[in-house]
Length: 135
Length: 147
Image (cartoon, rainbow over all chains, first blue to last red; front, top):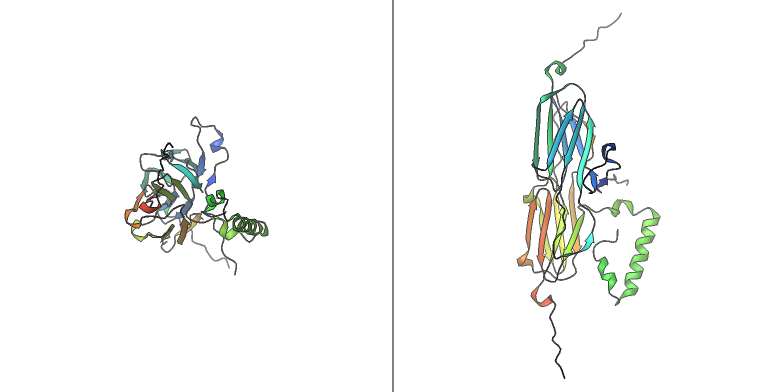
């Protein structure tokens, strides 16, 4: 039976947003779920190690950038004997459509998961087009 | 890839068993069959000193009530689940990259653990388990007497 392949490894960012960062730390692309409801677009982004103070969200024109800063995870006086993951910051940018109401964006962080609700602008909400039968 | 317990490779006793295990791992890796098992979830880091081991795991968005940690000898087992979002009618995914499912993982630590002294914290999506070494397993300092 073909088992669905799930990629659980952290993916390191190539060149984050084509600019270099001043902090010499690794940058990861956080995994994200995005779904659309009738009134909003919801982003759920996994950023373990990040709390509400460490997340930075900017929306410029239609580019939504999410940045999360993580404290270095080294433990003093202990030796790392086995390692499967490395800590680093998170950065990811999405292009979103113009129909988002930029004043009504809600963001919460809980247990290392960022939840971002982008509400749609009123004018963009309902546009039902009736199709006439052509006989 | 090799699973926890790889530091035992440093011990020269029983090296034949280690060698054959290593050969099997490499064969499995090149046969292509290793992929579904190559990435265990959650990824862990293990830190040790003489007194205790600290296991950290990146587990974003789980309910700490639904996480089980159990200990037997030098084995530590983590199991739990992450509930996927339930979408209403007319709601559709644009992208779905996060994995939501049950997980279970057993780690072998380099010494036996005192099950009563275990401390587990879940903060900012990172699980941190402090597992103290059993008293009889701790290293003893031997003083050398001058003749």
